Image (tube, rainbow, N blue to C red; front, side):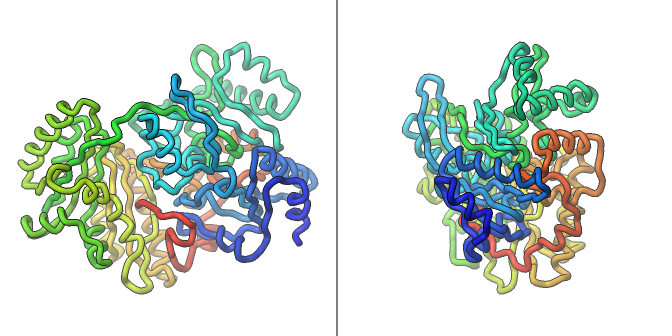
Length: 536
């Protein structure tokens, strides 16, 4: 047996596996890449993660690097949940919800808890974490926190295992407490001293990174700007949120929930022309909806081929003759009268765009609630040898540039002779594109890389961001054409937390286009290989 695995199995509560079958099961995540690990660990407690990290640190001091790759459900589409060395899989054992504080609406849990389990637990108290509504229910909460910068809105505190095995408890501390932390003669003290110095030495770069709720950009460590407040207080939490396991391994979390209406209302509008759907989005935004989804008709066409039908869509097709797009709107006001008034007013406005409009009162709730599942079908195309892999999932595109983006997408589809299905969350200005290609062919692999690069360039040109919904991961690092001053700053930050390069190497840094070419899958069998069902 592998000597490292044998040693750790002797000292851990959990298990470390080196069998080919288990290693193969973890070679894919939700991305188009694959990377077979040397070992897979199933920790049962924070102490197990500490022992793994400490042992890897000791080996690295002797010149032998064992990469550590934290992983939840493996739903990441940027290649951040795969890698060589050892996968640290929290989902099998570290999946407990510990406690819920009713008065503060705080919940303490482990990272391997699924979003579905968390949502069900909170629903018993009439609360939820609204920011998690778009994540697939079988994804893990730890994975969401590690991947998404907007998770800072609901993260209260984190317990993080550092690269040397020490445990760091994050929270906002005062200027006086910061000085005490900086005075500690241990690795935690080094981290605080290093981050504080980095912030102090780069005020101009931080000013350019000012956090903006209306602009989503997950490249690098965008939370750095939030660490230090004007009053001198300090909190490392924003660095770990969205870091994709490259700065530390999250082992426990305290999250903030909020009261939500557990039975929201829904309106679905079907459009025969995409231009009408675009114009209708402005009217929808005025209604202050809880959520909005834009779904290309191509998804429904793929679902129909697979035998999955939606009654409202069939009725709309009969009335309109053709369908270009579907928009689903959720109204979440607590007051039933207010909710009904909004529904009636919005329905009237949408019909003025020649849309086929239905609501909860027109169809059984379940028919409309299942609408989002239509996005599964393009992921599992019926055409043999074809697949529909993620390209850039969750691109941030300002709505005032959406028309330019949409026209550019059409041009790319025509240029590359491929179907490009579009799904979006207009209120969040996030968009997802899925091509239909044969990944087994060299030509289509090259086409996929070229398309991804061109999409990235196009989005940047219109003041958007390629990675708006989650971190840039391995894919973003490999597609980055050149370094800039912010990337250099982020690399210095990475070196503070991970001086020996053991934490998820190749993610956010140090991956090239040539590396990606070697790691690209020959087929995208999608969700089944990673044990989850991807939503988009």
